Structure formats: structure tokens, C-alpha cells
Length: 201
Figure 1 (cartoon, rainbow, N blue to C red):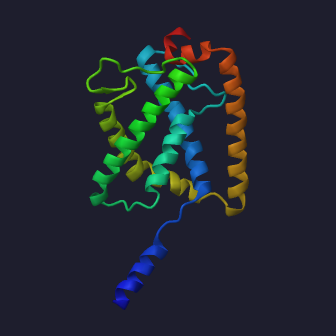
Figure 2: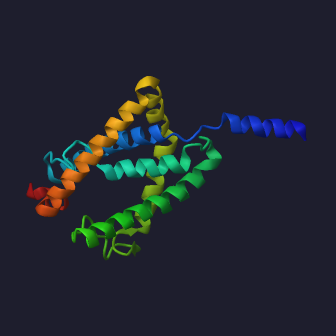
Figure 3: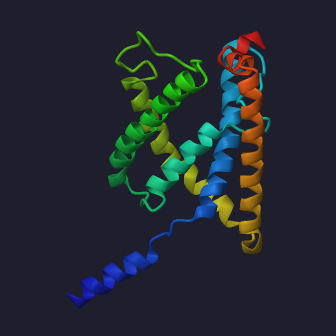
């Protein structure tokens, strides 16, 4: 019994602790990565490079929020085979729901449809589908088991004395950019229209 207690205590001690600063850096890195993924996708679709996102900077926060969600869900998940199904199912449901909420938000807040799956196979409220949920599950699992560990390794190289200051600077940049961009979008909805129709740029 005492051996089990000691072992359980040691396992808890070895568990990775949740870090707000890691979450900030994950958000920033995933936002930047997502921006260039979007540019690459649009380039393949329309044959030209078009800046993506509604913000001024080279980042798409929706990818950053996705990264935060996965970090919060799986920051202490063991990268072992028996957890792959758990990660897949959880990522499918959570990221699919996030996409659905974002789609509804753009529709009813900005009165614009960033995407619409009406008429697609097994669509859900027009803004996601069952096959897309499966896709999110696959991408989320790949991210959790392969990409997130690399990002966390990169973050670990940051000097400790700069960790908090840099995180505060990142937060200020995103907050200011979001406020200015939101004001700009509310006064010029054509920006969102061009995001939905990149061929019009």
C-alpha cells in the first residue's frame, strides 16, 4: 500500500504543470503558423498570394485559439498509443464545436458567412459537417502528438527572466491589433467580404 502511495505521489510530482505563459506563446505561434497556412491554401485555390485574416499583423487568431484549446485539454497528456483515440474523439468534438460557434458568430455578429456547408454530406447547422469533424480529429491528434511538443520545446529555450515580459508584450500587441482591426471592420465590412472571396483582391 505504501509503495502505491509513494508511486502515485511521484507520478503527480512528475506531471507537467499548466502554464499561462506557455499558453500565450502557443497562441502566438499557432496564429502565425495559421496565417501562412491560410496564405498557402488560398494560393493553391486562386493562384495568387493574398494576405489573410482581419488583423493588421501576420497572424490568424482563430488558429491561436485552437492551439490554446488543445493545450488546455492535453497539456499533461502522455504521448502514448493508448491515448490516440481519446485525443482524436476529443479534438473532433471540441474543435468541430469551436468551428460551428465561430461560423454562427460571424453570421449573427458581422452578418457575413465566412463559410457555409449547406447541402454538404451530414452538415450540422450549415457551419460544419461530420466529415469535417473527423478531419479536425485527425489534425488535432497530429498537432497534440507531433507539433505541440516541438512548439513547447522551442518555448522552453526562452530565457526565464524574459518569459513574463515577452508574454505581456505579445498580449498587448494582439489586444491593440484586435481593437483597431475590429473598429476598421465595423466601418468597412468589405474587408470581411474580401476574406471570404480572395479572388476579389
